[in-house]
Amino acid sequence: MAGTAPGTKDRPDSLQVCALSDKGSVRSNNEDYFGFYLPDDNVLNQLGSLFAVSDGVGGNSAGEVASAEAVNVLLQEYYFGDLSKKIPDRLKSAFGNAALHVYDLGMTHRSTHNMKCTLSTLLLTKNRFFITHVGDSKIMLLRDGDMIQLTKDHSLVGKMMRLGLISPEEASVHPNKNILLKSVGEGPLLVPDFYSGYTKQGDLFCLITDGILEHARPEELKSFLLERGYTEKELAELVAELNKRGGYDNMTILTVKINEIPQ
Image (cartoon, rainbow, N blue to C red):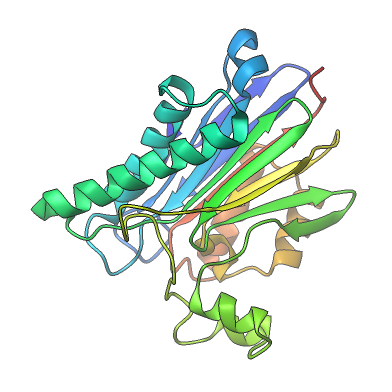
């Protein structure tokens, strides 16, 4: 499933997936995009389930095209491309092909000139997770009451925070907080960050674009998910609350709850 509309899909006794994307209260269009695919058992056992969020880079043309193309090409390449059967290599190659596709479109069509986007992907296969990531969208993991960010922001303020130059509070109001240091579409060859780990029953993965944390601290997001839930209805309530606080940016949230570890 891919799109900017709400989405919910369950794989019985395994995964519960909910997603919502909203343009916010200020912007006229939505440059965010999400997509996921829950294959049948045969493909699932071989390749797992893949989830992605993308955010068109503000200030560049056709951000909504870049984000949609990145997610859709990624899913198509991963499941149907002539790629390595080794999961990490296959995921990295699919990501690279999607990034090259976005770059090529940005170079060859006037209407999409210089378009760029973020792209964060989560692959779940058996008891493992694999992540590829470029930009400042985020993949969070809520486990045993603690929420941690699994990805690194490729942004100016993200780098400044890692160097200890500014605090998270200062980063949230920094005048250059939207400047990206790395994005899909910036060049023909793009090496994403890659992370992997093991999953636990009860894990909740949360893929978000940066608009979600424009008006909510990570601790608030954690409390909301723990206390209110993460069905389509609750995600809509979360987005509605953030719109009341200003809704200055597009907002996308995709949650994946692991109800059972596949054998």
